[in-house]
Length: 166
Image (cartoon, rainbow, N blue to C red; front, side):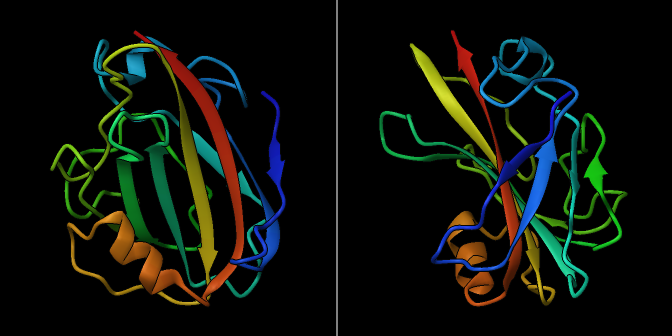
């Protein structure tokens, strides 16, 4: 399992973090287990190099190759800063056991919905952000609301990208 280091985007600012998954490597195929054709459970994720002043972690997973534009598969925010990753199969509930709050994905469900492209091979980005505050948004917030609330509060970030084909 190789760590994926992505340097922060200029518009966000912040330090470099690292994210990986024991289920798939950066740029590799995502196993069917984590898709609509399998068990549709979230993959295990781990991150490190979280900046010291971090007050919460946010996670957004999306597919920029969807026919209608980016399709959001997972929105999870206000994860406690001591949490260094998520186990496989985070429950689709407002407040998972590890803490934090789950938002609404584009399938109109709380939590994770796995890759399910209508055809072809798509990219799936798992983006983790270290924030200098809790967002305080209610359960069910969407990606846009989370990104707006994060603006100016990103201390560090990283991205893990995997592919999936039907």
